[in-house]
Image (cartoon, rainbow, N blue to C red; front, side):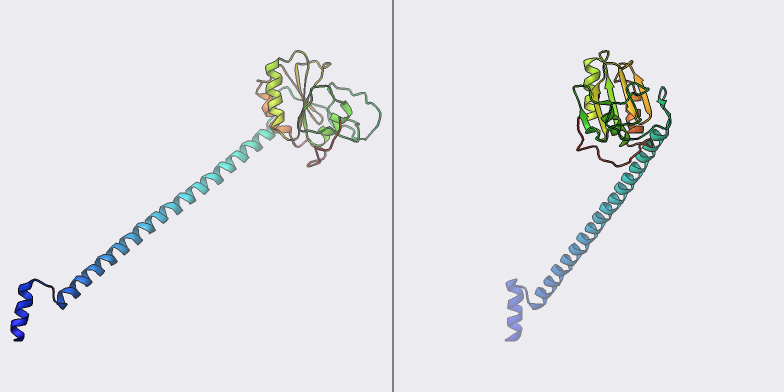
Length: 221
């Protein structure tokens, strides 16, 4: 009877208990292989991302260091044509001051400075207040009728995007464009002169600044 039943099961083609266990074991083994493969792929991908992040971070640090070195080199480099005036007085006064240079780049000055956080003035400003702004580390760009409209626009755009700078017309100056910092001056004929950018790099809050970090806002005309 039993013998006939086993023979009937084989002939019917239905899997027996042993076959089912083998099939389950095979499926589990396949799942484990897939899991191991996925873990390996994930590990490799994570490793690639980590290496990429490290490489990117290293490049950013190196690039930042290189940029800093370039800025330091530019700040220390001599600029042809720059004139300096030595030690200048810094007394606050209420009266007008007769300055030895035009525009003035230092000396006694008003107790209130001009706003110089990228301010472009379309009218001449008070010498005594502009000089105070120079004391705070600002670069003052001045120009007369020899400057072209393109020059004025280029310089205005430069000043508007540069904290600690200001710009105003100065009809009485000799050169078309004059760049002024404390005790420092440069005359150029055009805004395209490469020394303009060099002057900004070196003298905006540069070593000549008498009061580093002093405010360039809350001033007056």
